[in-house]
Length: 442
Image (cartoon, rainbow, N blue to C red; front, side, top):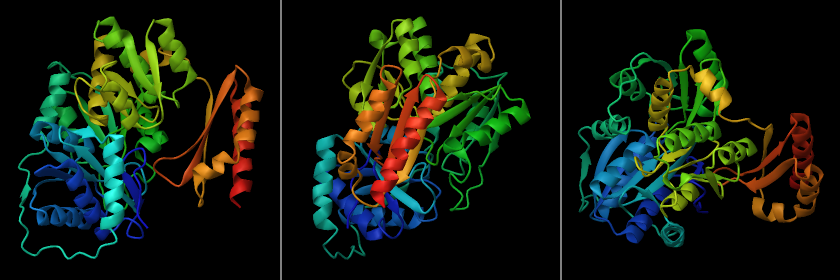
C-alpha cells in the first residue's frame, strides 16, 4: 500500500505506512520528476524523524544528488532556503498530527509547493518504485552537507518584512508545540526586540502537539492571561501555521488574522487588487467584514496549496486558512507561523492599542461548529451516498447559515462544518450530520 498526497504532503502512521523504504522511494520519484541537482532537507522533532531523514538522504545521494541537511528547523525555513538556493526541498513532518504519525512535504526548486501535475507524476512513479526492492549504494555518488546556519538568512528575512521596526515594549508568549520552533522562537523574537516567554519548548520525540500548540489554543490562552502578556502565539509542530490570542484571551484564528492584515495593508495601499484569498472554511463574518471595506475575498478549496496556487496568479499577495496557515506572498513562498506572528505583533504596536481591542472589533465571528468523524472506508465514496442528507441540512438553514462536509486531506476523517446565526442551530445540524455519518460507517 502507498500513500497519496493530501492537502499538504504525504502523511501516515510510522512505521505501519510511512517507513524508510516508502520515503526513500518517494524521494527517488520526486527527484526524477523535479530534475534538480540539490536538495535542502529538514525535519521536526518526532522520534521517527532522524531515521526517515537518513533514508531520504541516502536515497538522494545514491542518485548522485547533493543534500544540504538543515536538521530540525521549521518547514518555512526549508522553503526559504529552497528559494534562496533555487533547489528542491523536503521536510519530514506531519505538521499538527500526533507524534506517532509522520509525513513528507516537498518543495520544488524556488521553494514553491508542488503543482497538481507534479504531484500526480510523483504518485505514479512512487507506485512503481515502492514495489521494487532496492539496495541503496554504500558508496553514493552524491554528498550530504550540514547547513552551517540554516536560520540566519531566514530570520533576517523576517526582520526585513518588519521593515526593520522593533517589537520593543511588547510582551509575547509563544507556544512552540514541542516542535521544530522550540529552539527558534525565543531568540527570534528577542532579536526583534520583544519580551518573550516560551512554553512547550522541550521536545522529547513524542510530545509534539500533545495538548499544546495551535490545535489546543486553550493552553496559550491560559498562559497569556496568567502572565498578563500583550499577545500569545501558538504554533503547530512544524511552525507553518499560527493561532494567536489577544491580551484578554480572545482567539485570533486564521480568519481574524486575515481580516486584520487585509485591512491594515489596504489602509497603507499595499493590498494588491484589494483582494484576499481564503478557503471555503472561512467564516461568514470574514466575508462580511471584508465586503464592508470594499475588499474582495477569492474563495478556493481547503488547503494552503490551493491558496498558494491562486496567489501565484498575481491576483493577490495575502491569503490563508482559518486553521492559521497564512501566506504573505511578497515575503514567503509558503505559510510561516513565525513570520505571521512577527507581523501581527508589529501590527499591534503600530496601532498603539491593545491587541484585545483591535482583535475584538475587526470582524463578527458567526458561530461555527466543527466535528470530525473517523472513517476506515473511502470517505469520498461515503459522502457521495449522503448527498441527500447534506442537502436537507443545507435547506433547513436556508440563507441564515451554511453546511460544508468534506473528506480531510491529511487524516482518515470526514469533517463537518456548520455555520449559523445561532450556535444552537449550527450544533443541531452538525450533530444530525455526524449521527448520519456514524451510522453509515458502522
